[in-house]
Image 1 (cartoon, rainbow, N blue to C red):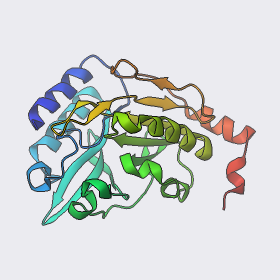
Image 2 (cartoon, rainbow, N blue to C red; image 1 turned 30 degrees about the horizontal axis):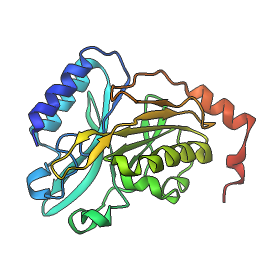
Image 3 (cartoon, rainbow, N blue to C red; image 1 turned 180 degrees about the vertical axis):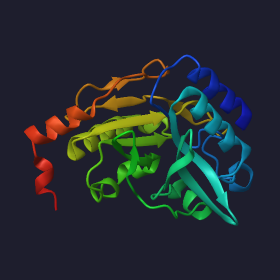
Amino acid sequence: MDIQSNIDIISNHLSSLEIDLLVLPEMFLTGFNMDAKSAAIPEDHSAIKALTTLARKNNTGIIGSLAISEGTNYYNRVLLITNEGIVGRYDKQYLFTPSGESDTFSNKQPTTLIEYKGWKLLPQVCYDLRFPENVRSIDYADLIIYMANWPIGRIQHWNALLKARAIENQCYVIGCNRIGRDDNGWEFPGSSQIIAANGSSTLIDENNNSLEIEISKDDVINYRSKYPYWRDKK
């Protein structure tokens, strides 16, 4: 767990890009870590300030989840960071009980849309993906973003569920998954991808490289106008 090293990697990555939003995986500064006392940082931590500086320098937004501490409570929290600092928050609602996450972390910031550059973003984290009601309760996201530590043994679920969320919500879905192997021997294959509102145009990160793509909100609007299934949602 090397927070500064991960910030340096993000900085180097941004230096070669001109993008509106950088999407990072779950607990991107520390890896998925249930030792909250060692992994969690407060929102006024120097790492958050460094990310704000990077967002300002590169004129972009940065979104990903972090282990965040508030007093004696800990949260697996998504932060949207821009040149103004933190402009959006969401706490993972479905905490992964098999790992003991629900015994360590809480959730305070509810499922909510975050407005960013004319888009309605709906952040979600890993295990949330298995629970479609978490996003179906929201009207209506332009882009759902899933940030994850999803292991290779269940990657077929990741691929199928991301596509399902795009189809049923008629919007773009981004799935950003970590790569590599953690200290417990779990392997993470990436398979980060962007899925269009009709479930097609999937770009899969087969080589564990970053994806850079331009998407249009008009595509979502036009698709929903042509196939207004969303009007029948209960």
